[in-house]
Length: 166
Image 1 (tube, rainbow, N blue to C red):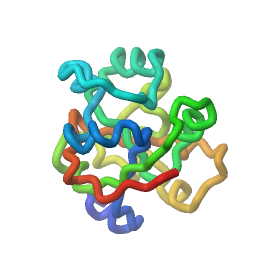
Image 2: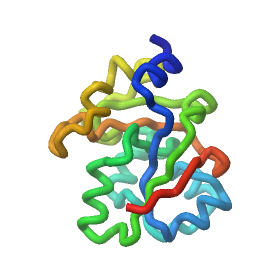
Image 3: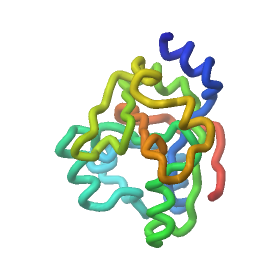
Image 4: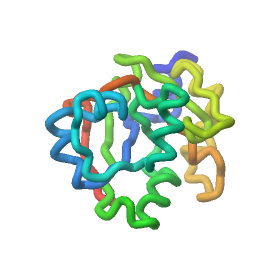
């Protein structure tokens, strides 16, 4: 199956990004930007989802040039950031899947910046991520919940279908 067929087969009509509500005005103005573009454009971010270690790992692997996304509106990193008080007012941005076709995109079966992680072309999504398990509400400890999508550089705000609290 190609990517379009995969998305249709599994009923994936949106992809997701979590952040803090304090970042929404900047996202509305600038779009959802990679760490690299945020740094280049000197955009002040109220609340990062990643910490300095995470940002350094992203830079080391070249992942700072990508926006990190989730296939489902539930990701272990969001839980950790809220639990630890890093994100105080969590929101999920619901994003059109069309962004996967517009920019260089990839997928990973675990956190993309993990030392053991390998990212693959987005066309290989169904081979890389166990979508059947992921989309059937796996237990919070299932490793597939950590899978990620990455989209190069920027996602325009016009591609955000909705903002959901939680």
